[in-house]
Amino acid sequence: MTPHEQRAFREINKRWLGGQRVDGLAFLHNSTVEATLPSGERKIGWGVSAWFEGGVTIYTVEAADGSGDYDCREEWIRSV
Image (cartoon, rainbow, N blue to C red; front, side, top):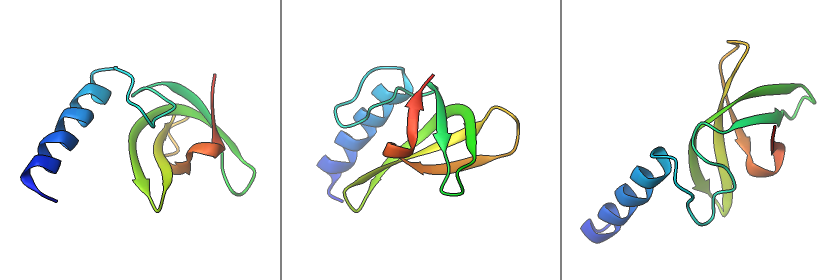
């Protein structure tokens, strides 16, 4: 990643962590969401991290029940 790309990434990350909308991300940082895991289990939690992997948006959802963090594809998540 070039220095220019690093600065741009840091700025986008700063905006998202500050609660601002970022193009390409459906959810705000700390949005309350329901994630449906591949097992079919549903977890309510908060979107605490997001990144792109192979053209897919992945969010880390911190489960409200204290069971841990789950990495979820965007299509597995809905707002609650």
